Image (tube, rainbow, N blue to C red; front, side):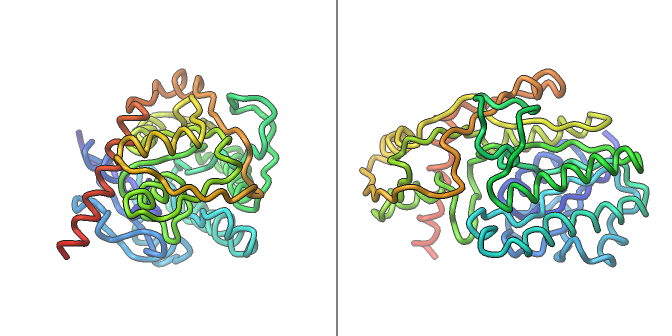
Length: 313
């Protein structure tokens, strides 16, 4: 396949680094922009060109956007609890920063964006599984910032012809989830069980979440590149897992008991989030390939190996 240039913002992060690898494997010419505030240089595939910087830097955008077929936009502030503490920063980064990126795309005639959106746009859903046309009433500033940018993408499509696919991630999990500070349950709980530390459990573990393996999420981006027009598509496994059952499964895979600490309720956490993925199957011919338990095995293996590396180091 001839080289086709793709710019990936946030390509040194958890999902972004897997997307970059998948693109490189398919022969794309990939340029990564990441300020490393949440990403890691070592995560970036060596076949990609890496530029350290922010999406608000016009000089960087003027350098990398000419000749690009599309932008895969994953750069964002994404820790929900911090969005309560500093909503202005979230809207400035996730919304205004995104508009600056779109304006540079318009200047350089880049006509497509694949946007990393979120199930947080739905808020507390009334029906499960959640279809894309469900009511969107985000209950935290993070979700509101994602929904706001989706609406902006709609306007840029109709006004300027910039096509876009907003992929609404549910709960991505897998190797290299090294979020700092760590807030996502799978890596937090795996490390806690491995090292004998407390496992924080909210809502008595009764919540239900839709976990999709990160390589499947990466493949969804490749599928989205083939679409034209304007789309909003759920990316999940399509089945929910009860959180207390997740703890039990991790105990089984790791071979150690969890030290459960019940944390009560946590505001901003809907009781059930499960995706209806029928649109992704129909429109993109995409479906998750990695079984949940198999994905957890790979994730546990990664963190066990990381622990061995720390000992050796």
